[in-house]
Length: 519
Image (cartoon, rainbow, N blue to C red; front, side, top):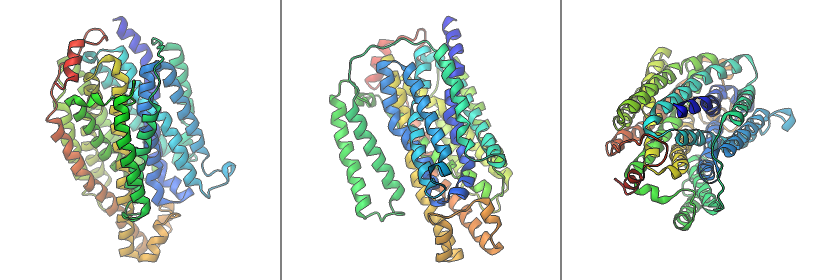
């Protein structure tokens, strides 16, 4: 009872920190058409998301490991401060203070990377702190609450983003993080009580640097290959070689490090390896695909920014209801294997339905399709983290949480960059076919503006060609996402249902050893 009271006191601060990351993503997605309209660079649209996800990805393992070694409270609060600084800089991108709109899109991309560095510590520390305070058997209900709050933030994000975009300046999509972050910092400073760690072991900085270089090089290959540079160009071949070399150097360094940034022995556990792969596929398909929905809704379907936020409600609402139900069910029964299977099936079905969209698809039909996708998300979001945490000893909770989050984030990084390249190529080829090469290059080039206001000023025949190209490029993205979604339930079939630990948060040594041996 005492533990439950302690968790409930801390939970509002943790949820506010999580809201920061989730709210920001959804707000920015809704505001992107307006940002592109002011700063230009429609072909750089995916990089605004990629930079953020990449920053999150490379920093997540570091945040998790530092928290394990030195205690999570201070580390958590530092990550919130970095996120808030990044938010201020993003809001200033392209402003007269920084030289005006010229180069504003590049500034925004760079500042989003800084914001992502802070965001990497938000999600992993929320999950790890809950893991510190609550044993796995009871963790389901709290992670269900967490998933519900995430879904609420994802619901509120498009609405807030739409209101800001329609009635205020898009820069407030970033500035709104400041009051939320300030309240979270104050609450956690007063209410969060965690044991302080005194640990003289050095951080595996070399491993962290090599992993970051390898990830960045791989993402750049997927983003630039076949679009900005030819696949056989020196730039792409050089980045590919850099990724391979740094990854090859990373593995032996991790095996020898006293405190590796990503302990490779965790992957001897079948469940941990499977759930990491599922997290990668979830991030790849989910974040890579839904990133383009607001652009489709606002340009092709003619929705306002606020209404495009409302159109995402079925997905977020379904995810919230299902995730809360799953959390309760896991706490009562201790069973979890079925849920990632159901989630993968729901996600694959949702992707297939969304691949059928075209210029004439009504808004209610899109809402129904993304509602199916939301059901799949609800079964998967927190179950993946719970299985990862239950596969390791308590002392490795932070690094297990960060590794699980890392694979979801790296999947999102690859998904956004790969699907961004596919989207740009399909959009350009579609407009070339309908409008001619010169007009297509002008509209989709680096300074191209395809916001609703620009479309409204076009001649009807030109606008029709652009809308058909945008619709085709968007539905094509979801078609490409289907194979990755289908792989999720196939992998989940091989998960072994190891009983969830209960009682006190201390590790159950026998179960942990059995789990780490690959039971």
